[in-house]
Image (cartoon, rainbow, N blue to C red; front, side, top):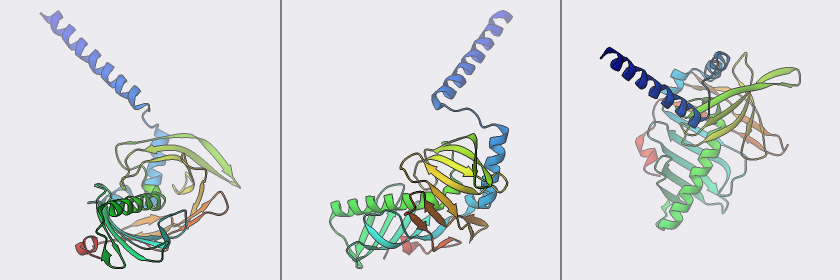
Amino acid sequence: MIKIMLYSVKLKLSLLIAVCCCTTAVNGQDAPSGTEIKLADKLWEAVGGRENWHNARYFMFSCKGGNHSFAQGERKYLWDKQTGNCRFDGITTDDEAVIVLFNIETGEGTVYINDTKLENPRTTHDIVSEIIEEFNRDAQLLFLPTVLEGDQVSYKITGDKLIGSQRFTVVAIENRHTSFESSVAGQLYVDSQTGRIHQWRPNRGTVAFSIGGYKAIGSGLALPTRFTGSDATTSITYPIAAALVHIEGQKFSTP
């Protein structure tokens, strides 16, 4: 009887180990090393801390530059990180004022052109989809230092790189579901002493970015606000970047 029980326990343990090994193989990633965990802590420290980021809910930011087909000039956003509600204010390429109220999780929204609600469902859908893509592109750079958030992120130190007289740690990273509902994959060039990101090389696209202009945005957080493309022509800046304590709910429901 005892032998049968021991055999049963061993069998269950073997099955458990097999399942764990299978899961690791499917995920295709190893657990972070001690050095990688320390670097991740530095990244969070540079942005103001994981807890401060987790507690921050409302953000207001604007963006200028980059390749955008729908809006021109400065693009302004309000974002509720908890609910996914967003507000976009901008000027179309036809010089019309546009306000889009949408949710990045559901993909639904309403569009106002020159303060008049757009009633055509198909056109509304197309514009909302375009603005969500704009938001994803703009948010991905501004909130890049928070890319380690979530349970679908993997990262690995792949080496180091000397740029000028300074050496940076190169980190290959992929996050399939960030807080701003977008997937991110590429290489971070990190100052291991400060935790600040110096360069970002996304896997998609041919333009890498040098990063600077870190500034305090409130709620104990600091984010980069200047991105210069490796093509010598792309320049993206964030004139406004702020974490807010409160935003009136009507900002997400009425123009």
